Image (cartoon, rainbow, N blue to C red; front, top):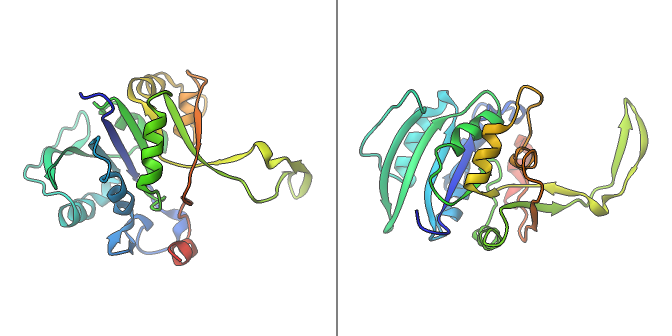
Length: 246
């Protein structure tokens, strides 16, 4: 393992219930690519990317493999390891870039999907990215990578510009000062050994966390924030697709 090498965990195991479309959002085409591969293309521009773990829904095995073979990777061998849930694992050559590619089945919640994934990481650092955020740019990825040289955890964020209010039922309680509020984004990035330890020790019976930083901060308290230069909002509904690349 070379110093500063990193792994990408690309999450696309969601069911897209809120997307309300026959096709899941991660497989909608934009810019001649399925949505889940648009951000992968940006990560591939970074030389120190050494492994990618695709976390998928069991029902999407064939379509994911088809898109990966068509647009990026050629799978010469198919391996299935029930214990680790690795469906495919091999070393591939992409434009003279050697990558270790794994495809695994996601869990019932995001937490379990990431927990299974981080335990397969062999690189020094790991970037955990939501495929429903396809607008991440290599510029921001490189900036986060630079911050990891002096920090163990980085949370990419965007400033909150909307007026935020606290409510109780159907009534407003008070205004919330947005000066110290940020909107969390991805890729949430960590020194691998720390986030692996955090996931393996987190008690999910008490609560199911909604992101990786929440898991990390249950054991470690210091997370550096990075303000993204480029918008990286999440695609949740069909209307988001229509306006996303305008």
